[in-house]
Image 1 (cartoon, rainbow, N blue to C red):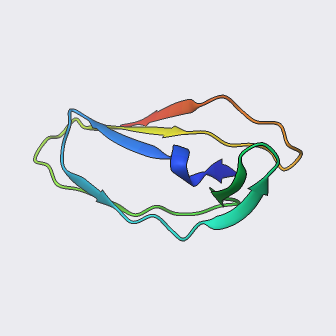
Image 2 (cartoon, rainbow, N blue to C red):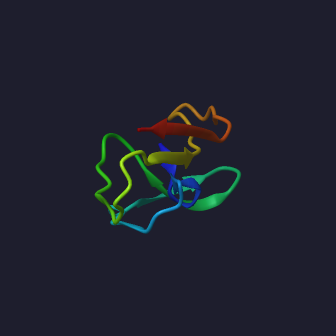
Length: 79
């Protein structure tokens, strides 16, 4: 699962955008207490308002496995 509060978006170069995050679910974390998470597959609609041809999307996230192993914060980049 992914922590909802750790999910971040950034456009390079900076451009205006809107995202509509899906509803998250509450999970009891043994260390953090009650947290909002996303699990399984989900879609995040994003609208980018730009005239630029070469905009990259950076997505930052952090999550844990169902077995309790937590991953370090990560970033993925999309053209």
